[in-house]
Length: 557
Image (cartoon, rainbow, N blue to C red; front, side, top):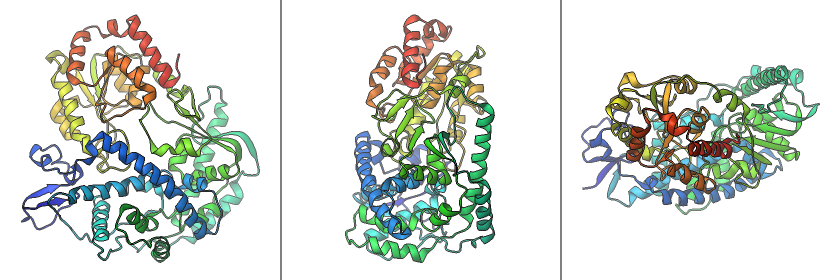
C-alpha cells in the first residue's frame, strides 16, 4: 500500500485518508512534533546526514556564483544598465542565497520521497500569497505553510509537465504618488552626498575612542534616512505581466531538472525592490555622505536603502568592510562566503581564517560582559531556536535535527543528581514561541517544569548562575565565557560542524572538560564540580585555556 504524504502541516478536510505520513517535522503541527507516534511517521531524512549536507552546500555554492552572473546580465537588460555582477550581488544578498537553498531543499525532499512508494497529498490551495517587495520579508514567507504547499505542488506540476498556476495575489494596494513626492522633497532637503569622509559606520561604531555626541547624531540621521527611504516600498506594485515576459525569455530549456525549475520561478519571485522598485529606490532616496571606508555589521543584510549605498561604493571602488555581529567557533562554511568574496575586508570575532579577514576587538561586547556578576546559585541551560522549514543551507540546527537536539537536552537534565535538578533553570531563545520557529516550549515545560523556564535577558540570566551550560557553539557561549562564570558547552558535533581553524582548540577544550559531545560525560563532570565549580574553573590549567579561547574567539587578552 502506498504511503500518503503530507508535505506541510496543512490538512485536507476529508479525514478519511488512511496510511498518512509526513515529509518532515514541518508536516506536524506544534502539538504533534514531540508525539512519538507521530514523529515515527516522518519519512524524509536527507538533511540528517552530515556528508549529504556538505555535498549539498558545495553544489549550491557553485550554483549561486553561476546564477549571480546570469541574473546580473538579465537585470542590466531590464533596467538598461551596465553594472558589475558584484553590484547586483550586494542588492540580492542574502535573499538569493536563501532563495536558492529553499527551492533546492523543497525539490530534494520531493525527489527523495518519489523514490519510495508514496502518494503526495495535494491540497490545491486557494489561499493566495502576497508577493514581497522587501527581501527582508522572505524569511517569514519561507516559513509559511501556504507558501511551502504552493511551492511543493508547483514542483510536482513542473516535473509532470502539467499546467502551473500563479499563486500570488495580484490585487495589490494602489501605488502612492503622495509618498513618492514626499521622498523626493526629503532627498533635496536631507541628502549629504556632496561631502566625503574617510570612515563611515552604517550601524555600529566599534572603535574604543569615539565622539559619543557625533556617534548618536550619526545613528539618528541614518535611522531617519532609512525610515524615509523605506516609504518607497509603498510606491510600486508587483507586475505579473512583466515578470512572465522576463521568465519566458530566460527559461527555454525543456529538461525537468532543478536548474530549469529554478529559472522558471526566479523572476516571478524576485522581491519588488529589484524589479519594479529598483529605479524608484535608486533615484528618489535621500543620499548619504560618501566615504572611502564604509563599515557595516547588519546593513548589508537587512537594509535595502543602505545596500544601494554599499553597491554604489563598490562600483566607485571605495572600500567596504563588514563586521561579524556574533560568533564563537566559526561555522564550517557560511552564506557561500558572500562577505569574503564581495567585500574588501571582513572583521571577525575569531582569529583570521580567510585571506581578507581581520580579527577585531568588540569593545561593546567586552563592556557588556566583562564585569562583576552576583555569585548565583542556579545551573542555567541555554536553549536555541530552529526555523519550522529550512531557509538556508547551514551547518547548524535544522528542522530535521530538532528532535535529537531536544533529546540531548532532556538527557543532560535527567543524568543530573536530584540536588542539581532542584537548582536547574532553562533559558529558551526569545523567539522560541514565534510562529516562524518550531515551538519547543511545551516540551521544555514537560522536561523542566513551567516554573523553571527563564524569560529574561542573557545578562540577567548569567547573574543568577552558579554554572552556565550552553548547547550551541555560537555567540551565547562566547558571552558566557567572557562573564568568568563557570561555563561548559554540550553539543552534537555532527550537527554543528565547525571550521578546521578551531579544530585543535575544540579538542583541547574537550580534553579539559569545558566542551562535551556526550551528555553522560557532561553530567558526571557536573557531579564532580557542582559544590565548588570555581575550584576547577580557576585552576591554572583551565584559566590558561579560557584565556586562549577568548584570545582566539574575540581577540581578548
